Length: 205
Image: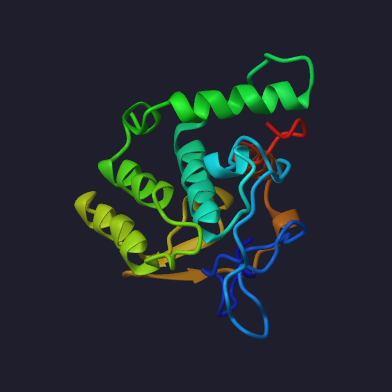
């Protein structure tokens, strides 16, 4: 969720809905949670890491792998295992998703995308359970990609222009005091339609 328009946090992306979140370390000692396996599937199968499908306790590496799938889905509009209709129940469907996820090469998964996406997933998929992620390196992949594409991180997000609430002044952005409900109906509908493309469906696939 983005910060309120015209606030100091208007370009800040907030992570919300921590219903399934848990600590990766002990609150008091700071030690990493222990490795476990034989766990049931937890989370949304479409974006779940391969290790999650294998029943292994989730850690930071799994969050990073899921982020990779979400980015690819938002850019491409699909994933190879999206919408599978095989199986008589959820367990069989999860198994089919896992098998396809394991068998799909990164070259195939990231076809048509910049190399940085495959590099990102290559790294996070090979992380150890309790390994400290190199967040700076992973972020640098996409900072470098932004420069290669000739773009600037000016916080001028696509959806802001679509809602018609942004005016450009030099390289900075100034926002008008406009409520979502005050926008034209056609803009409201388009914004809702665009947002829904990256939302998870109710079937948890």
